[in-house]
Image (tube, rainbow, N blue to C red; front, side, top):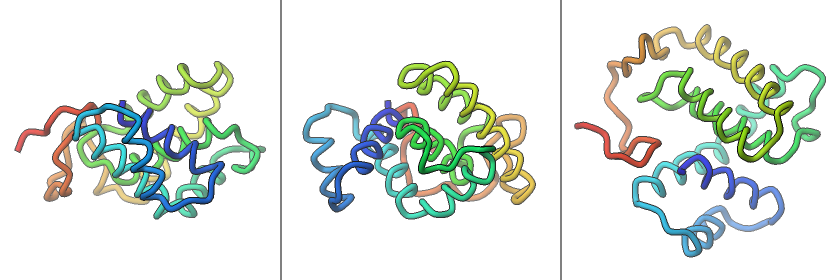
Length: 161
């Protein structure tokens, strides 16, 4: 639910020139969601907007024959969400991040897009793993670093403290 909300907010940002906070506030006025889902979706959107150039370069570098500007709006934003999570999410294995992106792609895009998204994300995952071998989540275990200030997991449940 949080990723789908983030996708909808990012999609809206593709078409309007408005302050991020205004778009997020308007979105949540119209949608009902738990605080945990809102927090995670807002974390995703804020992080993606802040690191858009870096994220888009990673996507572009691993999407053969496709410029990011030519990708479908939905596909590129699904990719942005998953790439951001691959870079920043400390509580979830990369395979789960990719699977969640593929499930969203199945709902909001087509079969060809799902295959394309899977290929790009797998390549990005390999690059991120090589770049940060210490940040890799091994055997689905969280990293040993102190957790970020978020209090919810992506599925909306509170994390164990």
